[in-house]
Amino acid sequence: MSQRRSGQNLLIVVAVTLGLGLGASGYLNYVQFSRMQDEKAAANGQITDLRYQLKQQDVKAAATTSPSPTASPSPSAAPAVPGTAPVKFDQLGVSVAATAPISDLTYSYQLISGLAVANLTTTGLVAQYPACKPGAALGQLVRRPKTSRAASTSKLIKSFGDYNYYYVASAYNCASDAAGRASVAAAKAALLDTVLPTLTQI
Image (cartoon, rainbow, N blue to C red):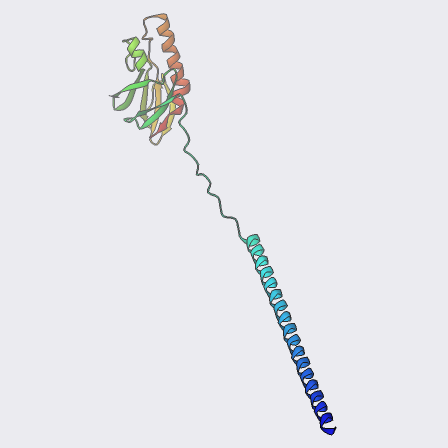
């Protein structure tokens, strides 16, 4: 009888021990699982914080970065004035901008009493009226030193350096008919009023 009771007591002790062991093991597993969940949550929080910080840094960088300068077209050269033709008087060191009706202005050079002279006409007048030779048609452009006195028939146009530039009109009309004489008169007016005022030094 006593042996049976001893065996029962042993079984109870073993059962209690196993139960305590299983309970302790379960508790430890629960503690480890809870710790892992906490660490995972903390890691997720750090990743979220890191992403937020990086996003904020990108926003700040975009806000503080100065925009790249845009290339501006460089300025284009000014086009030549329509209807004008430059005429250079190389021996006189000047040029003019010829316009209609004398955009075909031409000349012959001549040295008269030490003065540089450009005898003026147009190719159109010469072609239609052979007598409208240079000088005879539209007169002369004369370069005269400032120390030299000009005749009363000379009209001062401009001065450059040591020289004055004068215009001397032709004494007669070289055209042989009324239409031609009107053309010559219009050409002289255009020369004096429009072309010679553009005289520039070269």
